[in-house]
Amino acid sequence: MTRSRLLLLLSLLPLLLATGSSPPATLRQAAEAAGLRVGTAVRPYALAEAAYSETLGREFNMLEPEDAMKWWTVRRNEGSFDFQQGDQIIRFAHAHDMKVRGHCLVWDHDNPKWLGAANFTPQHLSHLLQQHIATEMKHYAGQVFAWDVVNEAFEEHGKLKDSIWFNQPGIGFSGQGTAYIEQAFRWAHNADPKALLFYNEAEAEGMNPKSDAVYAMIKDFKHRGVPIDGVGLQLHISKLDFDADPIAKNIARLSALGIQVHVTELDVSLPVDPTGAIRGDDLRRQADIYRNVLHACLQNPGCTAIQTWGFTDKYSWIPFHSHGARGGALLFDKSYRPKPAYAAVLEELSSQAMRGH
Ligand code: XIL
Image: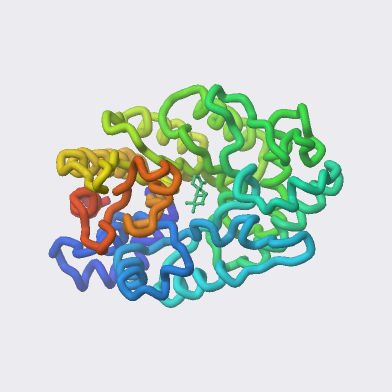
């Protein structure tokens, strides 16, 4: 058992004793008994809706702003920072005793238009990025326990993506491989030495050229003492013939490097017919996928948190992202009723708790 899991368990002993051997009634209780964080992405405007905030506070012990800490929200212009939306989420988390993951400081998406339009020099971009990382991380120091410092830096075949931060024009390390990522992690560590620093990636969850490239980078960083604590595996799943074994393998090799793994953006999108309906059979297959991903995480003590990308189908990025072709990706339906996937996750988490972690 890792030290963080042990500490979490100790802090939960009174709850465990109080609940005796009766099975946990919520994801949060089950996760706490299993020594795991269970989280979800959150939209600040939805917090005003009673069903949304009640479900969120009841079921999860961790959350992450879906968009509220990104450049496009925080940096409407070059000269100012707007933390209102992120602060609102932090207040909710504090009131409900939840941990907060921060997302994200370096990405080539979800940036404000002015950033790309101004044709900044590498020197200026370097200054801007360092200032951004320092200002945002210091603002949330002590409130955000883990940050996705860099998001989605690799292409499918394992090459680094062209981006404003890497080489278009970049922050001064163009042509030097992962050096710009290393610089971002060093700035992040200086800004908040206590925060856990994560590299977050999409479609690098199993064993493939992209996850090999991420693995090689983390191995190199650990070897040279670059401050990095974890890898986030996004896990936006759209294939219903999904195989979780390669994920367990990838989690095992990453945690063998001495880092934590968080599942950060899990959702399982389903085809939606023109009437908006989803097939019952698909809901059952979806439940199996959620269960299998969770199982892959629970098998390895290095996997310390599992998070879904939203929790109600009412607020999910999938319909928008797929132009309405897919949906139903989350644990609760649009009316906050738990779906078969919810029951599967609760059962898998509970069985882990019963096994004695
Ligand atoms: C998505 C959000 O869910 C949407 O609301 C937004 O319009 C675009 O970004 N990978 C990531 C997340 O790391 O930040 C993305 O979130 C989904 C893909």
